[in-house]
Amino acid sequence: MKSFEDHRTQLEAEFSSLHGTDLVRKLVDTLAHQARRIDALESSVQLLNAYQEGRDLLLNIQEPVSATEIEMASSFELSAMEHLPRSSGFHGIEFDNAGNPFRWAGESGLLTFTCYIDRGRPNTVTLDLINSVEPANYEHLAFFDDDAERQVTLEKTTPAGRRVTSVLPSRDQATGPTTLTFRFPHFRRLSEDDRRTAAVAFHSLLVTGEEAA
Image (cartoon, rainbow, N blue to C red; front, side, top):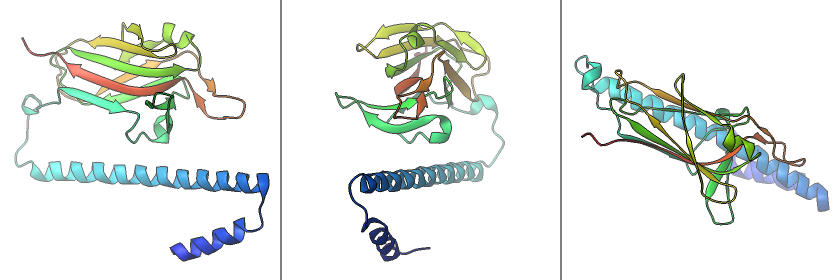
């Protein structure tokens, strides 16, 4: 493994003879390479943390626990500020003119989230989007609760942004994972110069359970 000084010496040698557009191109390539390495490292750390949490949970279980004894979360929240890996279809974090964070996502027209929430009661799903590659994505999106399609309501939050809401009905199997999928008909490259492919600009997702009567 190279030391910091080794990397510094190598970069000085590579950049010392460059000027103008060649220098800018080299800087962009170098920063892109470092960004990919950081994404890979963050994914590895996330996997390690998940493994450690799962191992600790298993070590703490002294006796078998029935599904009815497991207390599921009453809400689930995810924002563009959190680590959303490229492997899940999310691009790097950006900010709009108002300072709101977002990530272009849905390069195959799909946004998929897996959450662990209490399904013994109804839940409200709220998806906030800052932009879309095509306005028709809002009008023709489809939302699935596992394999069941659910109706959605759209609210215009900004000229380009929308809030998507839906209700998940309660189910007999209150525990276990819930997979939420938003399907958009249009996805494409963001521009001639930007080769990233996306459908929408993701801001946040919130799932909240209704209070018991």
